Image (cartoon, rainbow, N blue to C red; front, side):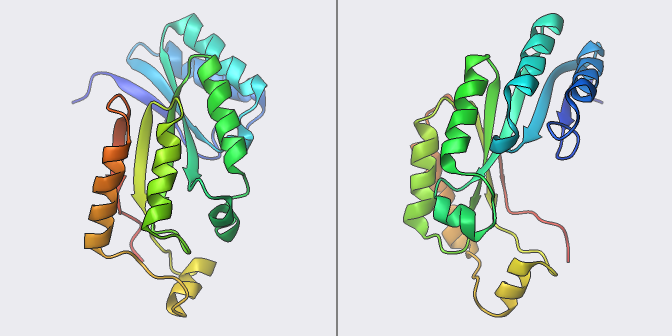
Amino acid sequence: KAKKFIAYFLNYTNTYAPPEDFRSWVEEAMAHPDVVGVDVSTRPDCVNERYLEILKESSEKYGKDVTVELGLQSAFDSTGERINRCHSYTEFTAAVTELKKRGIRVCVHLIDGLPGEDRAMMLETVRRVAELPVDAVKLHLLYIIKGTVMGQEYLEGKVRELSMEEYVGIVCDQLELLPPEVVIERITGDGEEA
């Protein structure tokens, strides 16, 4: 029975599209009287000036908030290479800087339990994010999907999953590292059923 909404642009519906298509979608959403803001999910390496200007101009034109969600997963580039993330921590921080210059809210996605990472690395990722001007964080537990490369590695014993106790302990410690003004939008371990 909601009365107001945030239009959420997921992967393949946003900064991969031609700029004028993107502008049309964003403005159509913002023009709707029941939409109070727009949330765009994308990759740090897909944040460029053209799309940022479209978001800034649309926000100013309609007087509605914009949030951009960036998938960082881990602050460690070695982990990024291991999971084929295809962007660096430096690209992530540059994207955050460009978004904040334009007054755009930033939400960061992090994944706990990535292959090769220990508790100290997961906490260090949150420490680094806490030093940046981010507005929100979504903490995810790694889930492994059957039929993927990582799924096969899991079956071969090359990737291990965190126990519930380990994950809860890590998340509790991570929450203590974040400034109080950072919104925790989600803590999840949910994945698609196999």
